Length: 316
Image (cartoon, rainbow, N blue to C red):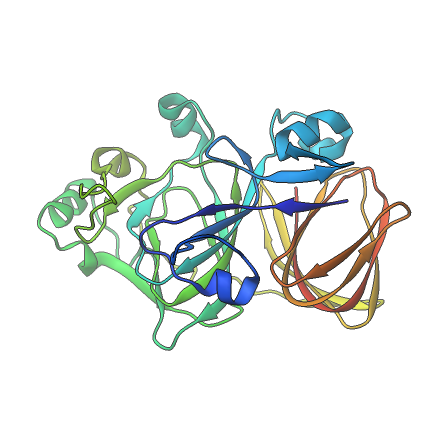
């Protein structure tokens, strides 16, 4: 059981709520993303292990193949990546490829992701797929003529909404939204439109329109938001937010004391989104609070959580 040291990203569209409300401390005014569980080369989280600071990848390797569980035994790296994202401005209109296309063209896996809305200002919206069927030629014409917005599916959001963003789904997080994202361990993004924004060097940010057109799902989006049922357990309730090939995500609400188990199928990632308390097992005791991220090996078997907390639990 280890507390994760996150990695921070200061993309130009980011805000300050992760610093103000989630205890993230960085120099500068912008904190766009906090990578809460990552062994990706573009952002490697750290852990404290017996006085030594290791990368998450080094820690997992030091613990042996059982640490990820048997559902992760074929992975050389942690197969998921978890983030907190604060959008002060609209993110680019973008799309991610599936595994087949990404392995062939980028030499890494594609990207399925899910979003859990933590905060949303009045009027905040997402782009989530297309509002009608189009052909590839029609979509290219709309992009080339700055009319892409005519076919985008805009969805108003509120706290607690859940979205599964499958590969090929054109999408964007809108301004005023703060969310938790669980995704495949991939950092491939094809930008389609970016509002003419420039990077810190004054250059227009790169677009990837040709690749995007190869992977975009051209069909109308029908599923707007996921629904979930509440399951009552001793000491806590749980909601299954997302279940897919790559990860399962639950919302756990602890009122006083919850006794939890870990089986050999998968490790558990706990992202604390509200409250504070204590988490402990037979050999370790940690104080936890909003904004903390905890990694629990598949070999740890049992632990308990004391306090009043809301937690996003992710497993394979």
